[in-house]
Amino acid sequence: ALTIGIVGLPNVGKSTLFNALTKNNVLAANYPFATIEPNVGVVSLPDPRLEKLAEVFHSERILPATVSFVDIAGIVRGASEGEGLGNQFLANIREADAIAQVVRGFVDEDVVHVEGAINPKNDLETINAELMLADLQTLEKAIPRLEKEVKGKKADPATVETAVAAKDALERGILLSQSGIDLAPIRELGLLTAKPYIYVFNVDESVLTDAARKAELEALVAPAHAVFLDAKIESELIDLDPEDAAELLASTGQDESGLDQLARIGFDTLGLQTYLTAGPKEARAWTIPKGAKAPQAAGVIHTDFEKGFIKAEVISFDDLIETGSVLEARAKGKARLEGKEYVMQDGDVVEFRHS
Ligand code: GDP
Image (cartoon, rainbow, N blue to C red; front, side):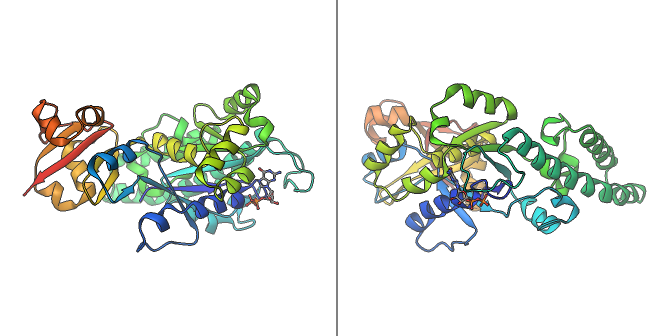
């Protein structure tokens, strides 16, 4: 499953945010038999289309697409050199598909800031420096090994070339994700700064409505995406029923909770989209990479669907709602039979034919 690791300095609000993520627990609600790991919080990708589909098909339940967040202990200055949790902790984020870095923007004299003062720019630099140092260490260890393997014809020369280019970029202070280097040959190294990043600014309510301040913070992390939320409010939202939650959100000038934003931006950052299926049992969203073709999409439901793929019957969501049923959509020529080369589109409602 798709996982995003949460990192940040101590006392920036990671646990508070993570509690909101785990309380939200869509898995517990939708997949009663799923095992829920204590350090994983799962949020659903908001998709109002699913409710409409469930109406058309009289579906018993709705299964949204999900994004998992893995809680990881805080990074302190010196983490890459074994201070604090050090390398062991860094090993835990190598597995994540993306990294959400929580940055403290809230002011509270009762909550000590590990670096002495609230300074988001400084905090970002501290964390990024630690992650870059960790990557440098990884590369310094890997390069001699890769060189040997290339000599023995056990590895592609591209691995060494890429590793050296990556090391060079890091030495110049460039995050690998922003280096323009194609890191595919050394993917197995799990380099931390090669992953897509989302920046989560944990700010006071007053900042949520302050467009100018948000633009300043956004500029610190561009071109990466920034999410602004108040972790304390997020943990309150979770305990409210939908109307009260909407009211609290509106009172802070937002139309979407921070958790919803995180799920949406996580999807976007990772280049993912969904397609939809529906029937009397469930209306469901399935996660695929943007640009996926029909057989690959079928494979997300079941590998047999991909192997035995014949055709996909596709109706776009808007056409389905307009015609009111699959039968009507077919009668009006809105149901298309697509083959192996079809590139899935956002909002496709699909039924696969397979052998
Ligand atoms: P972590 O060390 O990054 O996991 O940080 P915690 O989530 O434990 O938060 C550290 C302290 O800051 C706790 O006392 C939280 O209640 C407080 N805190 C977290 N988020 C906010 C926030 O948005 N506003 C304020 N005022 N306090 C917060």
